[in-house]
Image (cartoon, rainbow, N blue to C red):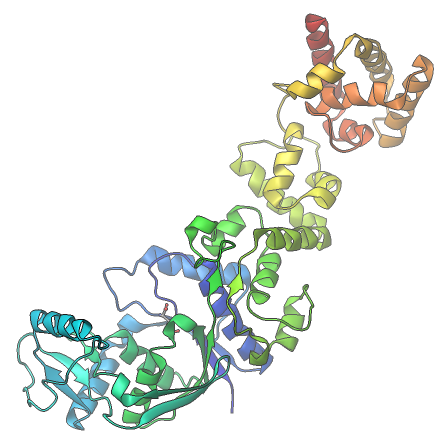
Length: 467
Ligand code: GLU
């Protein structure tokens, strides 16, 4: 049997972390078994479904590299098929028309609640033989009245629900459009799904869906319901926790492999291993490793992983990402500056590409302000001579290379008979506007001779004004 799984998002927003995690688990399970992974857009709710959301889902999947097999299936293109099967159930006496008004259902609900009962449809129209074409009629599925539904959930284990707990659910609305529980069954059946891996917010739907499979005469797929994701305050993950769409992470300078690695560990484990390459995830993924307890979103872990993958990544690739980011920040790369050199300088200390761009910002724009604390502490009278001497010696350098630049700095230190910091600190502040950062010789080389001298002059003028 070829394993077939699917991801079936409703296009009513971005691809959020929870959805991406469900998609990843389904994708991994299919790839692990050499099976197929389908993408189905559940867009029957026409009011809430949007084109932009479909695109956001496709973009998110593509960014994460979760490729699907075959064409994307859109439920709105399958109305004829749903209609056909609704008719089949009606013809076979497995479904019926119901004309109970909203008011009646509301009243029923209130009475049941007042009596401490679970609100459910009472089956008034089940035997009323309401004919087709009756205005305002919905179609309800005749759920079995007796017995129970049992299934083995691959995460939760055995689940049994009495049919008495399940009422006759609506499978087609008065306007003829089919409802979620029906379309999902028809699609999973027609698409030959062997395993349905989805969020456990659907676990209560599963027994109803199993009854529908039986009414349609097919064996249901296997189910695995993945526990939800909590924010670090223990409440259900939401925008408040910064857990926005997957593409926001791209926007924020995260690498897709870091997000993927983060997602796989959000509710799945393999011993205490934390780092998984894509190939390793595929090789090791199993439903047994899905945790039963909800998992907690943890931004510092994502940051840790991102930093790890930045360090592993090829400089040319990072340079391209950095270039994109700088463009968004409206910062131009000076002629002659190789962004791969910038990457090499900052990759060990950057959490995200955006962080790298921020740290390297001084290379791409003139210094407009000096860090106030550093200014006060470093740009004192004692800094004037070192800066002036450096200015003079650096101007004489013809071969603007790190070795020569380094030699000049050392020479100045020796000639002035001061500690290295007395020369290095004012120089770094002059070049970067800050007190910390990479080595001066590298910064000098990257900035180039003209710009370096200009910055030193600017610092000397600033310092003299303040004396
Ligand atoms: N469309 C449903 C949702 O976005 C998923 C249905 C399913 O996976 O069975 O929640």
